[in-house]
Image 1 (cartoon, helix red, strand yellow):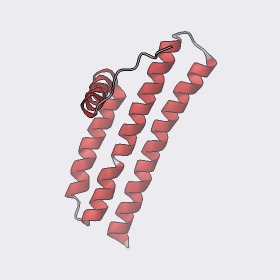
Image 2 (tube, one colour):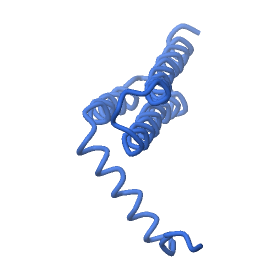
Image 3 (cartoon, rainbow, N blue to C red):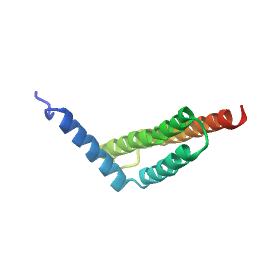
Image 4 (cartoon, one colour):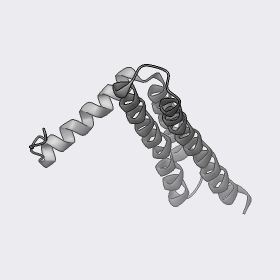
Length: 122
């Protein structure tokens, strides 16, 4: 039995990835909110009077919630593909995706707090 898999190339994979980013951006309000946080965070990270390394750590950490939000969106779409009915396992899967986003934001806050404390108080 042949699987319905397209032939992958670097350019096709890049196009699929960009299509996925556009789709999530168009259809997920929470992802657009994460993009706003990312944009403001980037401006702040590179505007602070701290070392280049500290700014890079702050800027790099801003990708963590974006990645988590994309994974959460993928989980939600997969669950919705399987069932629109209320099912306890579907709820658990969606709650786990939401927990991933929450933990990513907590990690972001921890990284920013530790980096800024190190830059300004040590």
